[in-house]
Length: 545
Image (tube, rainbow, N blue to C red):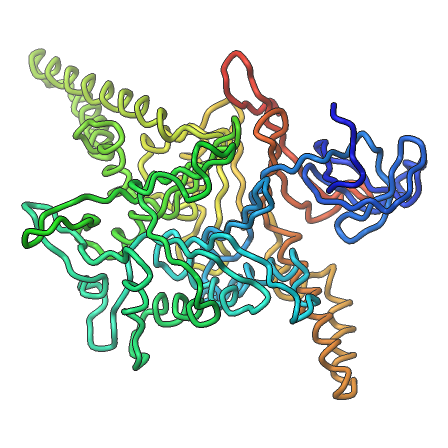
């Protein structure tokens, strides 16, 4: 083990450790905080034998020196942003990548501006001086133009203490205005039909393709262009816009020359001839606007050393069929094959079938099942991962055989409370378990990981918030701003404390998935932690339990 260098950044280097008020005293009454793998710490210039004094998670205290390391790890946080997706990534090079940010203002009455609040808490933005350099966000990626994935970026883009370098997107720009009927596809740009397939041909390839669509009149009914992308362009004119698709290969800066890679698996574009010009386009899925936007989500395979993660936006049945054909080279739809298997099994229950007919159905059943098995095996060559972000918040609009291509140990579902879809669906939860590997696959949910009370006046916070609001009501005008700042900071911290699923790994011997306990198990024990172990024989991670 490398010698700890106290002049460099420090990180927790074990699954978890307790921060104690004094050294050489491990009593429960002496516990200050519960720290987990990868937590950042600073040296407080005191040591005592095997103990070292640090500041971590806003607390001063003592830990054993052997529990610390100088090695920075990969951190992936699935933030509880209410309805939608919101993922915050910190790379081993201390770069920040955001993938989706929820629906922002809480159109389902849940979540609000939780991604913005999380960033306020994480980077102490409310107390950051206005003249200090903004915190850089290397990438803010919108997997697709649905409110519950992009609109939470509005408050992020509008925060002058944050600076986004590049906005990634799937090329589909909503254009509808008050005089265009929703769903007629005019709002997704021009389309061309080739045989039985219809294509979207006006994809945003560069920055000018987007900025040229900003309306001077403000008549757009959609918020993607009018508010969200226009806001980041106004607050940060130097921002770049990047169309991400399979042909991009890797997110710039995260190619195989880097131990951390972001391979882009979708959307998959096609090239067609339009009036003698070669045009890059996306096919329309099932002649449906929603399925097309969702199905062409930006899909990442994130790999750090041995650890692999799939982040797949809102993939649905039509897009999974399409990706299945593309990545296996087999011109069959997995959903159709699954339906055939069910139908042939039903037919074989008919006792009146002739032996000839029965054998014919058996042959067809065997062919369909073998084709599914072959496609799953081929999909795993590209998509197999250790952890998958559930497609579409625990919706059942997914194909089980395609999910088997992921073959994860763990699945994380991001969903909210006050929504009309009943996410995560009970049958989806069962499907995630059956399509995962291992005897005890893990399923995490941001919604199930916290008490719904915690986004208004959580019981543990109620008295303090009440005191602050009473103080605000009775304060002189000159004191109100500082008291309001205390209230906002208190509420910011709550977003990070409950519901978030955090993943910490060095991609080697340490791989942990953790969620905050609603009640401390013991004094100072606040985290529920699951460890994945590398199996050298199988050459993959497994969960023992």
